[in-house]
Every structure is written in C-alpha cells, then in structure tokens.
Amino acid sequence: MKKVLILIVVFFFGLPNMVSAQCAMCRAALESSGDVQAAEGINNGIIYLMAIPYILVGALILIIYRKVKK
Image (cartoon, rainbow, N blue to C red; front, side, top):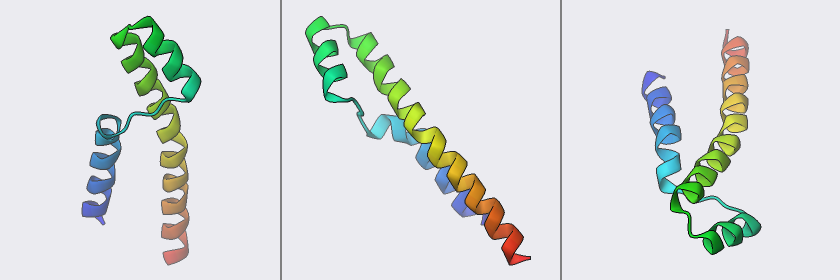
C-alpha cells in the first residue's frame, strides 16, 4: 500500500512538468504578450486547480475503501 501511495504522490508532484494546460483564450492572450513567466504562472495555476479535486476524490475513495475493508 505504501508503494502505491508513494507512486501517486510522485505522479502528482511530477504532473506539472509533464503537461501544459491552457484554454485557447488564455493561450492566445499569453502568446500575443510574449511574457514567458506569466504563461508559466498561468499553466501552473491551471494544473494545481485541476489536480486538487482529483486528490480530494482519491482521498475520499481511500477512506471509504478502508472503512469498508474493516
């Protein structure tokens, strides 16, 4: 169980480096301004906002699984 948890944590912390998530409007606005730091900040913000619900749902499922297993 600990190996799976470690793998999940490593995956979520490595996720921002693997993906580039921007909506079409954000991408167009940031590409036209040419500010690379702002684009990276927007990317990281979108990824963190996207990851939090998955982490919460995963934790909830884990809690339910442990209670049902007992």
